[in-house]
Length: 244
Ligand code: GLP
Image 1 (tube, rainbow, N blue to C red):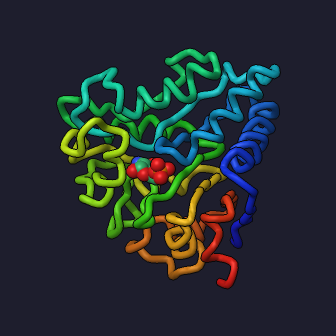
Image 2: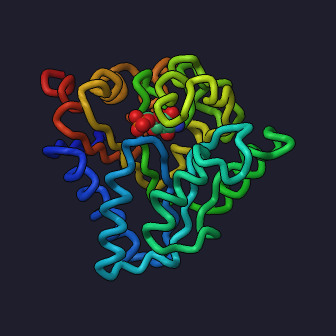
């Protein structure tokens, strides 16, 4: 299916557009299941959703599933993705933290935690999955070379991803070396996918993902095979699509 590609003036407008579609989904299905990403890209979506909740949207019946989580950070660590999603999504929307599911990055047996998360997800149908994209085309923490058939699994992060995420930590060496992530096959089961990206530094990855060959070397390229992909970009992130 050809993805819908929408270009908006700035990140706030991207956030509004995506939040409007998620809000409509929740209005039509109070017990919707929403997959949520971390990193900077989804922030404007969550800000716009919080505004809609303040204006009366009832999201109390929604279940939220995180894409990924670092391994080795203790529960409640300020840089864990659980904390990030509580701070940026669950608390601003006034929701119960029990509505949020995150892979257990503090588990004694991470491989078992990955299997548990996958089986929980397999029992639920994700209605819409919000995604960002890494500069090397990663989605979740699925680095280039990840088999498209992978489900939730343990990953050793590349140094480029660790370096890109160092900005969230007080020192680069604090970035964990491993994580748990939904795999491409898990992500592709979502009914709809909302990919968001901002800035010129994402333009090449967006163009590769949407216009390049479908290849495990660019994990996000698998999204070309999704039947309901909506891509919302600012002008910077769309820059390399214009001539493509
Ligand atoms: C991180 C996350 C991804 C995210 C990507 C882009 O490594 N695991 O889920 O989409 O990188 O991050 P950002 O939106 O901050 O550029």
